Every structure is written in C-alpha cells, then in structure tokens.
Length: 251
Ligand SMILES: N[C@@H](CCC(=O)NCCCC(=O)O)C(=O)O
Image 1: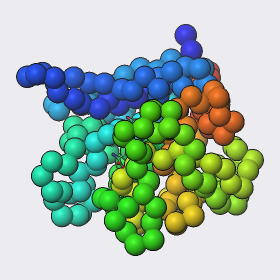
Image 2: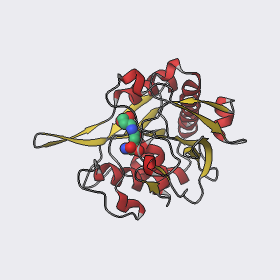
Image 3: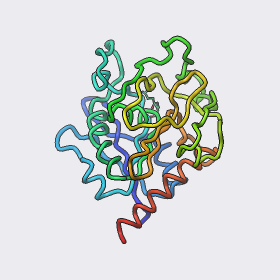
C-alpha cells in the first residue's frame, strides 16, 4: 500500500444529522501528485482521534481549507457576529493535534484554513476579515463566478529567500489563487514567513525548528495541482517527505 496521509474532516449538518467530510480536490491532489493513500479522520466530539493514533495509522497529515472560520475565541478575539460559519469540532480536532504532530517531525502540509490553524495552534492570531484592513486586497473569491474563475490566478506572491518554499518551487514570485477572508495577524512564535502578497498579507509559513517537513500556504495548490507547476512541486515535495517517513517507520 502507498504511504497514508490523514485529513481531519469538516463537520456539516443535513437534517438532524451530522456528517464528516473532506473536499474531493484535496483527496485527488494527494493521490495524483503526492502518490499517497488519503484517509479521512472524523472530527469527533468525544474521545477524539489524537496525535498518537494519527502517527500510528498515517505517515503525514494535510490540514485542508474549509468554508468555516476558526472561532475567534481560539485566538483571543471577541465573539463573531451571529451568522458566522464556524466548525468548533474541526477547530478542536485540528488545533489539539497540530503542535504534537509538528514537534514529532510528522510531515505536514497546511492549505488556507490549514495555514490559519497552524498559526493559531502555535499561539498566533488572525484578522477575522482581512479585506476590512486598510490597504489590504479583497482575498475572497467571487462566489457567483464559475469555479474555474474562483480558483484562477488572482495575485502574485513574493517568496522569502532561503526558505523551504523557495527551495521547492525555485522561483522568487509566482501567481496564486485566493479564496479566504481571514488571514494571519500576529505570527505564532517559531513560525517563519515563506511568502507575502503585495499587500503584505502572509501567504506561506513554516516552522524551521520542527524536525520534519512542514509548510502551510494561504492559497489553494490542490486545485488542479497536476496542471500547475508550483502546485505540483509542493505536493511532490510533501509526498516525498511522506514516503521517506513511511520508509523510516518500517525500517
Ligand atoms: N474560512 C477561512 C478559510 C478559507 C478556505 O479555506 N477556503 C476554502 C474553502 C473551500 C475548501 O474547502 O477548500 C477564511 O475565509 O479565511
């Protein structure tokens, strides 16, 4: 069997029932571009699946994007206005596992909400609405546009020298898509910026002190990753780390 990558689910409701789900684009990008077997980890409310179990059943973890916003109380902000789309169970399951997995050298990739989770789990804060900050772009997608347009190239990112992202993509700047309303405000201790947008929004981070592969990006490389040079390279680098971790585990 190919090495396994765990993905912690979003929770949704349909009628009176709760469901655990992960977007197809993440699963397909992992399979096609990282050559791994993705498995879904339910976001349980009681007896959740912790970091130790994830390390036993998988060789890496992907923290995905998600339409819900991390609860503001998680980073010390005032409560959100009513109607905010939140997923407290996803928050509980991702934020509790992330620090231990990172410190254990477990290969980790974070995408969009996943980048925000990495920052909040390690003690950083977010702008709940980055487009309301003077001088910032609107980083949200046009929800009325066709999905190809929503995930089309939207702005460039400048890659920081001597970081892991630069080593992976081998470029100083490139275009990315953008599908988010929250963004990093205060960077968590131990995190390093890997890329910025022109409006200064932090677009990629890593934790250089952690012993394993780790990278998180604010854009969506999973979208048709196989058609995009930088996205393919990011998934390939993550896949290589997952394969290496699997080999070392079974040696
Ligand atoms: N809600 C957060 C994160 C945005 C995000 O991850 N969008 C992707 C949604 C679709 C998907 O599941 O991939 C924010 O608004 O900043």
